[in-house]
Amino acid sequence: MNAVDERMRRWRLVLGGGPADGTGCALEGVDAQMDAALAAVYDQGGESGGKREGGLGASAPRVARWLGDIRRYFPSTVVQVMQKDAIEKLNLTRLLLEPEMLEAVEPDVHLVGTLLALNKVMPDQARESARTLVRRVVSELERRLVQKTRAAVTGALDRSARTHRPKRVADIDWDRTIRANLKNYLPEKNTVVPSRLVGYARRQRSVQREVVLCIDQSGSMAASVVYSSVFGAVLASMRSLKTSLVVFDTAVVDLTERLHDPVELLFGTQLGGGTDINRAIAYGQGLITRPANSIFILISDLYEGGVRQEMLRRVAAMTQAGVQVIVLLALSDEGAPFYDHENAAALAAMGVPAFACTPDAFPDLMAAAIERRDITRWAERHAAP
Image 1 (tube, rainbow, N blue to C red):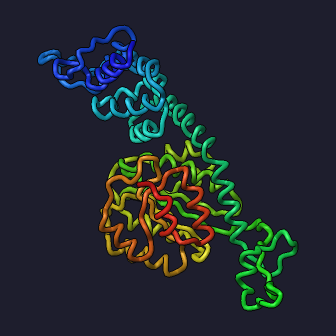
Image 2 (image 1 turned 90 degrees about the vertical axis):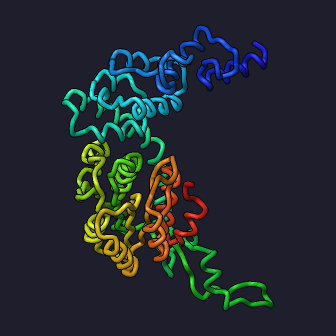
Image 3 (image 1 turned 30 degrees about the vertical axis):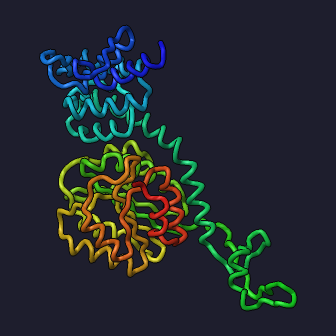
């Protein structure tokens, strides 16, 4: 096939056929089967007017065949997008309650979010299949994120522990020591005389930071709930941190006791419903015992169904008490969703920036918070668009 024919073939697959696509290209064999799989989701209307019939109907066997086809013809990243679009466009959610469907799909974060939203209406057999799928996704996320998170947090805790009596030369922080002794500079010898040493303290076994993850479980936050649960479990496994995790809609549920198993934690959530951020912050505020050594992370789109001014007052009170407050509009790869710009601006005015964060950047964000770096500046460099 020459370059022109290949270009027309690709345009034909993109445009979907019909007299208006202008390619004049007919598809055969595998190309025709790929086109049919795409048409099932993305074509509109029937054969009249030159457009092919799309849709998967409500037939579980037909959907199962389609799931098998797209996994055969497309890479997994494309399969995940097509599954998500099919669920949204063709209302296939009900079919996910059938175990054979769960065994056919490509597992990904968005699918996990959909399953969690269906958790309360799943029959027992489907729930077991759903748990297996969720565990596969969680295991993959742990493989990708655990080591990086542990390394970033452990390093930050070590760096944040300072002493003026380092016991070994290797424990001296030379940059800070030089800055602390610049007044002792001797021009004639071109040197600084260190009258005071600044070094790293030996790693402490006791709790050094309290971390509270407060997660909005409204439907738009599904991916953030999944990632937050994985990160919460990682942080909870570190002895130097006291980690709590609460989820909320109009009610608040403390899931800290489930942090040992992120799959169990996820099945303790209930995606959807209203939002009372003020109530959630009030509960999380009550978990903090050492404000100056605490990090409070609110993950929410900031659409408040409770008392807005009270919510802002509570955040201001925490920051004034020394709590490091961070607001994430999303913890996902997609960037910031729709969010309440007025509330985000009000928080920013208090020195609490609201921004989206990718999962890969979250370990460094935690390190920045532990070290008390400027989170606004961090967000300017690292926040998702």
